[in-house]
Image (cartoon, rainbow, N blue to C red; front, side):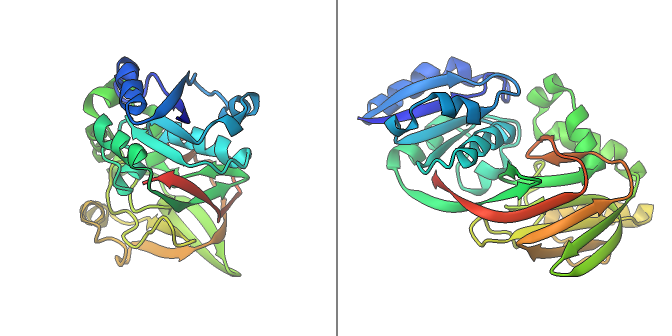
Length: 291
C-alpha cells in the first residue's frame, strides 16, 4: 500500500472537513492507500512537523484546507526539500489556486485526482525567503481580507469579500510603489498591487488573464490611482477579466522583481499576513502535485 500524510485544517471554510475524515480515509484505503491524518493548528510550522516525521515512509502528502493551509503545507515541503507529490483537497472559502488547477470543490472530485495518480510540476514563488503558491497582494484589498469576519466569510464565502470591497473601494487610499524589473523602475501611485502565479485570487477569476502556473513567470498587476468613475469602470473590467490593457492598470510578467513602498501598507501572502517592505519576489522552484 502507498502511504499518504493527510494534513488538514479543522476550521477551513465552514469546518466541515473534520466530519469527513473517516469518509476520506475509507475512500483512499479502498484504492490501496494507507493514510496518516494530522490536525493542523493555527500558525503551526509544517516544516517543523515534517522534520519530526520520517518522510521517506510516505509516497505523498495531502493538504486539506484553503489557500492559507495550502501555503503552509507547500512552505514546509519546499523548506525541507521534499520531492514526493502533493494532493489538494480544497475546503476553504475561495480555493482560488485549486480551482485554477481543475481541482474543484467537492471531496470526491479532489480524491479522484489523488487516486488517479497523475502528476505535474507547477511554479512556486518566494517573497523575502518565504514561499507563496498563488498570490502576493498589497493595499486596501489586503486589509479587507484580513478584517473580514471569519463567521461571515464561512457563511457567505466569496460574497463576503465582494460586499466589503464594494463598500470600501470608492475610498481606497493610494500608496507609492517603486517596482524594479530587469534594471527598469516603475514608479506608481497605486490602489492595489498583485503578484500572481495563477489568474485567480480573492474569488476574482481573471486578475492575471495570461498567467500560467508552469511557465517560470509571475504576473504583476498594479491598479493605479484614478478618479471615482474610472474606479467603477475598472472594477467592472476586473470582474470580466478585461482590465489588463486599461490605462489605469499596469500588467506585465517577470521571474524576479524588487518592490519598495514609501507608505505603511499591509501585505498579504496566500490569504495570510505577508512580510514588510522591501519585497524581493521571484519564481524559483517547482512543486510536484496530483492534478
